[in-house]
Image (cartoon, rainbow, N blue to C red; front, top):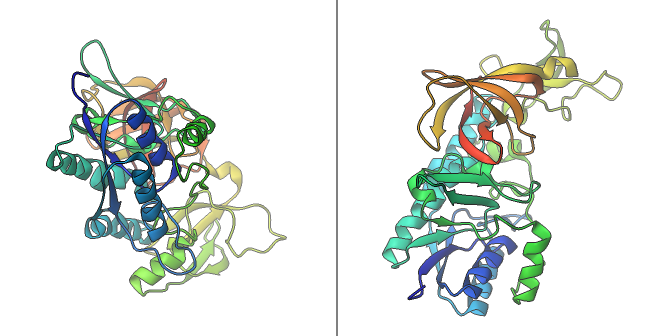
Length: 355
């Protein structure tokens, strides 16, 4: 670099964004740290990504350690409108949303790029475990992170390529243990901070309770088998997702049953045995392709939730999005979740699973 390039680093207060900043500082970039205040955590579960005062303080401590400016910007209104409200509405409609997809696509990266321009920065860096490459034809390629357990490319499929072209993911080529080792080597204050395991705005993991607090509404209904026989009652369809086994109220002596369908209009949750969960076919809408939209069927691998291993399938473009025919049946295809299409490590596109 003939002069130091200025980069905005998104600082959540977690170890990943902190180490990403430290690595870029070591490489000679001029950095500006920015924390987006997205949600006000409260109660006994106050620590979460981008939400709690403790996290913002950790981000500030890291920026102080690196000798870079740190700004906190209030994006709570946008986060509620574009992430939290659709999340609540989706669960009440009997589907299972992917809020991290919505956050990256609708709130974080585009907004950070706008802020970067205002601060004179040319690019935005985050702690995502994903990789960006430019091929021989100058096309942007979004790839899985090297660490298969931490890979976050699944959550990034919806980010427009013009935004990805301005992003840096310093951790994409690292395993998580290497990230922590770099943090320790570089003296990052929170290098040993525990990873958050829950949604940042539902840190206690009680989605049903969160929805009831948000809406002030409690609902009840019936748990039925595939023939419609009533087996139990429930306290809200928003407490269930396809594939769920626990919390069905069927008693310990009942044979294993899983949620097969959620019917919000009837207030019913349909359950059945494990074989009934397996399906070969799925459809997706609200599709985003990372390159030119395909016009003919093609072979690929499709990932239907974050912890799902992408499975071989035939993907067929449709007017609404795409259809998927898996080579082998997959368990618990949940409407509302993201279906992300890969060829090897490369993200081809993705969409939202249809009911």
